Image (cartoon, rainbow, N blue to C red; front, side, top):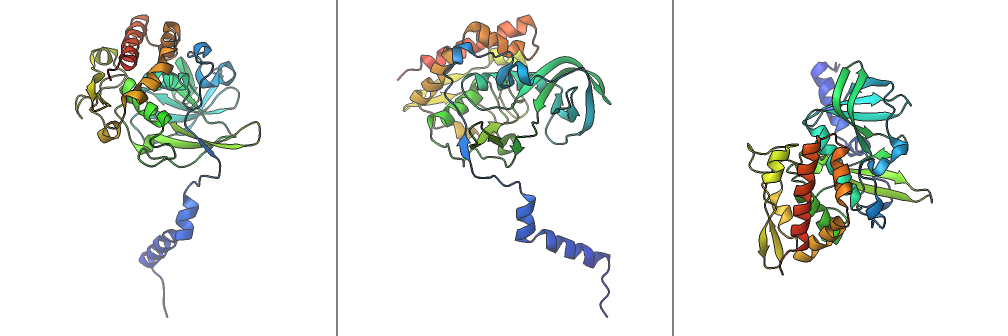
Length: 306
């Protein structure tokens, strides 16, 4: 008579979990819908970069923020929290909170779909204490978070908006270019259509310098200001100064594509650029340093030779 032991049970469990049916069920399937990476920002000159994509309406209610659970993964400490209005957020604490927020604003400013995020300079999270510079990232009940999307395999490869997104990563010195930082969000529009927002969910490894593995930095104005942006132009392609992950991704950006995103960025006023950094609670001096550095980089894109 066969009597299953503990080892037999483990083998059976692994076998069951490995079946195609179970593996399929474990994955967060992406439903049918229209993929969206970028939308033409016809209102770019009037966009509020202090409040960002969520505007005033989506701001978290900080009157009663309650810790729900830890959110493991990534470089920064993150918590799932509930605000005073009962809405769910992911609170990011630490050095990346500021750079993540400012980078989010700059991408949204030129038409890219983004997370809805805000930075609280100081907030009490019941169960964790009073914390400074906490980024709140919305988790709306009507938006489904599904699979990651890949830099080398997506519906936008080769298109101007995708090439422009790559330039934006170079503009903000985001060296942490990996698929795990990307997400597809399922959003239901007012007209009943389903849209698949291809976003970069984690932009924290930005606004420092790319450099080598040991010398890279994040959220460091003095490094960002000193870092070189454009090296030159070779055979119609822009040679950028980049030492981060996935370096080969940035070798096919043409002068025309770089100018395309540069033209959009050039329509932002100085005050709008400043607001992107003000939203991240940088000091007045840091805001000025980042703003002037951004303006220099935008001018380089607009004045590329060839």
